[in-house]
Structure formats: C-alpha cells, structure tokens
Length: 160
Image (tube, rainbow, N blue to C red; front, side, top):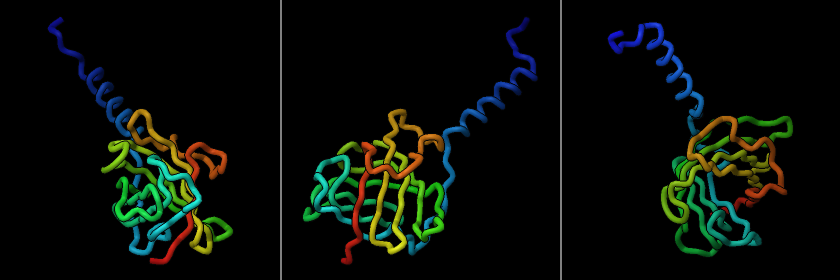
C-alpha cells in the first residue's frame, strides 16, 4: 500500500468533519432598531457583584454591565447576538441570546441565555448558562425562566 486513503474513506472523513463543525453553531436573528430588550435596566436591590451587576444598558451590539446602579462607568462589556425571538400568547417577548464578555471581569467568558421581556416592557428576566467549554451550542440554552436558578436575574426598565 502506498499510504493513500481510498477516495470513499477521504470523502467520509470530510463529511463527518463538516457535520461535527456544524453542531456547535448557532443561527442569528437580525437585531431590529427597536428591540424590546434595548434600553437601561436596573435592580438596585440585587447584590452588586461582577458576574451580574445592578444595572445593564443593552444596545444592538453590546451590553454594558454596571456593578452598582450608581457607577459612572460599566464594569464589563458583552457582545451579544439573538438566536431566536418569539412572542407568547400573553404578549411577553422571549429571546434566546448568546454572547461573549469583551471587556472587564471574566473577559472572554461565553454564555447563552433565555430572556423574557414582560408584555408591558418593564420587567426583564433572564437565566444564563455559562459555557465552560467556550463553545456555543443550541442544546445549552436554559429551558425555563426559573427564579431559583443560580444565574437568574430580574431587572426593571428605567427611563434615561
């Protein structure tokens, strides 16, 4: 044997590589200029710590997170995308999002989240899955908004 693999074996290997590479990818939904999630959100009663802050300012390309609601500058910045968006029968808007911390504490940390903005647009609840592998995967989205979850947050819209 000359050390060459027969064509069918090479084709099978390439096919498997394409499949495995596609498993960990997430689709993105284009963000609209008026997403319900955009704006300033605060929960001053929440503990101020680095994984989540008391204040988040959400825009189309980044989320700024402030440790304390009164801080003049964000403690961290997150780039994020929307994987899916839908409205339930009660009028609440749901998102599956994923992102990466690009500045501040835990820079490089990747996460996936299930997000819910109330029908009134004044309450934002989220449950986050921190990705230990660093790879996005559709199977890693939280399945429900559970206030008892370790990475559950609730924030309230503020007008600025």
